[in-house]
Amino acid sequence: MGFDISFMIVALKEAIKYIPVTLILAVIPLIIGSIIGTIIAVIRIYNIKVLSKLVQVFVVIIRGIPLVVILYLVYFETTNEFDTIAAKFNWNIHSKDINVIYIAIIAISISAIANISETIRGGLISVGKGQFEAAYSIGLTRSQTLRRIIIPQGLPVILPSLCSNFIGLIKGSSIAYLITVVDIMNGALITATGNYKFLEAYIAAAIVYWALCVCVEKASFIFEKRLSACVKGEVL
Image (cartoon, rainbow, N blue to C red):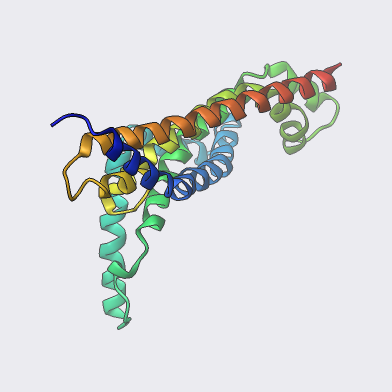
């Protein structure tokens, strides 16, 4: 059988409907990863006792585990524990009643925290130690130094990598279809269940993911230029 372009268009239209779901699976982990990742990065930069070692172990372990494994671990552990607790307290709900998108968000967020924390740490340590010392010499506290000196100078370095993290999250969110989350990938594949034209469905999904990533790159480029101009303006 030849390649069916007309069916690919059908799959493409269906996949487009689920762009909001994919964005939810990418944006929420990006926000969570940025917030908690910044905290982890600061803990490691200032080498806070005990906490620094703990978060370092967390980052090393999570970055070494494939996202699909994290997804399944969270999925099975969540469903098993929920059913156990529900049985113990005689609840009328079970794990099958949980919206699996929440499980996917948790799993993707765990991976995002580890990866984004390294992105932010790299950007912050790119600012010379002299900046820290100069800030302390004029009486600024650690939090003031970070907020007023280090983070503004580190942002132009962090932003391109953060954009790459976001693109990785958009593409990585496609594994959510493995636990039946209907996103771009699953939306395209569902159309092929009746005629087995999965090649066309996969290509349709790939086109949508590619278009999303291009939009993110363009937006990031524009924001990066404006941010650099603002930083240079402040320096001047």
